[in-house]
Amino acid sequence: MLVMTHPVSRPFTVTDLEDMPDDGRRYELIDGELLVSPAPGWSHQEVLKVLCFTLHAACPRELRVLAAPFAVRMDHFNELQPDVLVTRFTDLTEENLPRAPLLAVEVISPSSGLRDRSLKKAVYERMRVPSYWLVDPNRDRPALTAYELAGGAYKEGAAVTGRQAWGASRPFGVQIVPADLVAGLWP
Image (tube, rainbow, N blue to C red; front, side, top):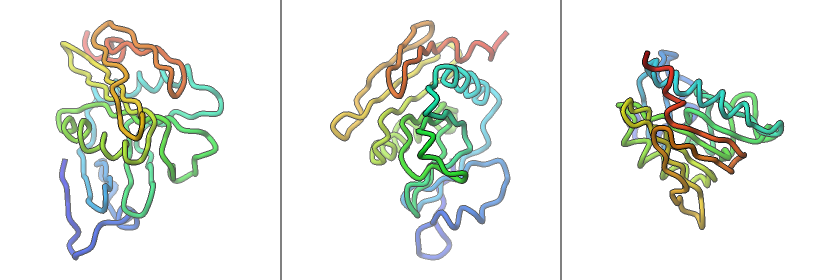
């Protein structure tokens, strides 16, 4: 991940993002600072795909499950692209989600762990995203940690590893088993 400052003494804006190259990297803004992440690897995408299918199968009609790249654009200086998000259908625009999703999920990659566990968690908390999940596709110990917003701060709601099943209730009922998310990664 690369954090860039603007060549002039002003913060980056979502308008600046529109001029970024379409080069496979993920460009996000947090408080006017540009975060540039490399294109995800195939294992990240495989986990993302399985998680999206799992969520989609349980998703009520009034909600939508979307995979990155899709922007959550809360204001002119902040635009994030969670790996997976769940939102109300009525909150979506064709271009972006202009309010907090009901769920934001980040799949941890070697280059994203620190950012996902600290910076993005803090930003999603500030945005008042009700649920934030971290999926760690570690081969020896795949894990999911779920945080729920309570009193304006995230509290750990679940931490499961391997074959442990977790039954989420927010934003809707669904069962997640970390080992199932990574089952297609290795023969």
